[in-house]
Image 1 (tube, rainbow, N blue to C red):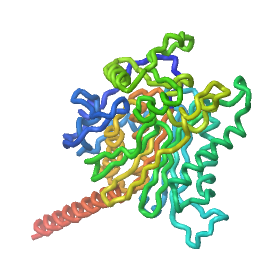
Image 2: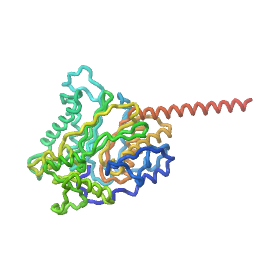
Image 3: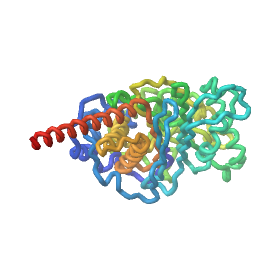
Image 4: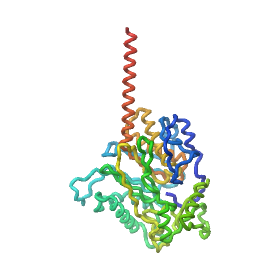
Length: 438
């Protein structure tokens, strides 16, 4: 997540998806995705990878998959299918401009039954978490190592996942404050983290979101893209109203000087003025970020951030909250895969572009006649992060891709086509050979 940045840059880098797409075959038409900078569709002048839908071609610029980055490691990936999950892969990277990686990811493909559970038959449950830290890595690391235990040990889990998530986030923040923070503002730990937690079981997806990480889904071979969560940014009307009601103030940050005069900040008074400022941000060539005062955070829901939440530290109680927004979806046969990403993934990529990047990898694998769904998903995760790096995002980068039935059908269909074409070609050769003998 974005903290206080002290360097300015243009909103978009020189890397352009349009340039890349010239190396690819003709594309199909479909709906356009939405940039993180706006919830509206990308306009016709967008630097989209493809102006509309997924690629017919699986050709990839070679340097995208082979380019070397300092300390970059290949994504980890699954080796077997579990229930509706056909594959998964995950990775986290510090990025090009950060000295440290404050992000953490956590995956447990088969959650074990806790000792205290009275359930006779424990269901197949899978867990995925993206924890986008800021102000230090302590909070995101605490979540990575402990949140799953808090969740499964909650007495409501898995009967009421919504309630168990809410209570678990409240409890883990309390314990984090006790372990890492003290009553002295000068020495207390002030790290915090966004959290995007996904539980899959009983053919349902449960997503708990705190902050501005995002979950999206490819549907029907990429012809549709669903945004599964909402970003808890200061310009979100619901978050804005809560902040104002509880005594916080929202402003549009266009000055990265850490020694600026805070008395000159222009605070947004109401929803009408907020819409005007959103339009200014939208049309600006410089990067502008909505922030909440006095914490200067660029997000309205977090775990941690004691100085933003405790009145004795100058914080505003109930303004920055740790309550997750819960989203529940049924898994259908046309669902291809889910992408869980920190905000660094989406800062300069639309939802559609992220999905396109993953599909490029899957199609590349199919073209190379490598239909292993696990390795294909690893390459998809790898390519999403690499494309974000090419766009020169300034943040840490974390991504999880969860393959579902749709992507399995795609790979199997292509494998079957390849087998049929091979049999036809062999038959033609036999006929030709037989004719030549006669």
